[in-house]
Length: 211
Ligand code: DC
Image 1 (cartoon, rainbow, N blue to C red):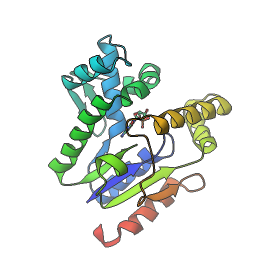
Image 2 (image 1 turned 60 degrees about the vertical axis):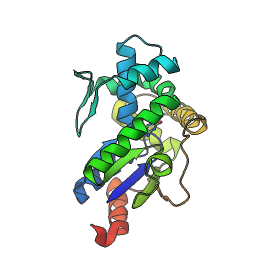
Image 3 (image 1 turned 60 degrees about the horizontal axis):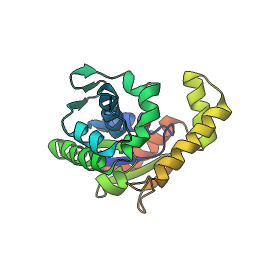
């Protein structure tokens, strides 16, 4: 069983993906962590994240291991650093690099092929990486709700966080390489007014007897 999940940052996509993987006893792959891992490696090597050729070359020979709870880049534990400010500020430039995308899309498909299935989350999973998945979900929530959730976790000003979320969505959905779009046959789940448990229950109902 292959479940593909896309959606913007802060919509609850990761929480839903992990809960579904646990309920269905499937492995889970966070592809955003892969783009973050490449960004970490690029910064560690002192390369400009916007230098497409250099970044792509570095990505080719980087060893990236995105596990269930750790991310290792060239033997260095990057689990917390990939969520830090430096990587977060530079990851959009790396994710806009078509050569990096080709490389990571291949690795993501290999990951699924090796396991015969799994729950894969990202921005282009339903549209580009796994368009033939058994179930395709687009998990979203209003920018305001996403900002409120972020502030509840890490603090900050809701208006400012909301503005930066709107800006990141704009960049992710207007870039030329694999912009984030909703696949025609994806199920859209708006988590603005739904708890994660309710969302997971709904999806498990959709999966039905395939469980
Ligand atoms: O989900 P996240 O915030 O960890 O994603 C990090 C960045 O990578 C974000 O800018 C979107 C991008 N991304 C992407 O372009 N394609 C994916 N499949 C996953 C993430």
